[in-house]
Image (cartoon, rainbow, N blue to C red):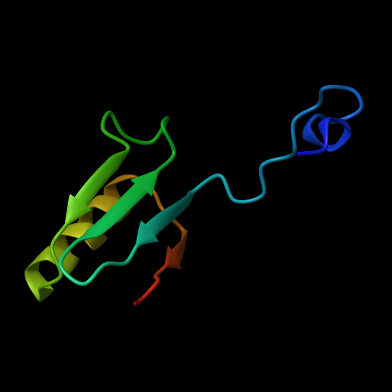
Length: 76
């Protein structure tokens, strides 16, 4: 790792572009979902892959004020 690239020049943080975003790690038997730490007391949760589980995920995102989501999935 290049130490010159690991820190910004002034120690400034990058601006937040999507403050109401969520992330989902898509799995075959379970999905891991995360929202910002300021959006929920438990910002990371796991959900099953069946329809009822996905409805619970959507309900949770709605409660947390999520406006956009990113998804990641890898396969063998």
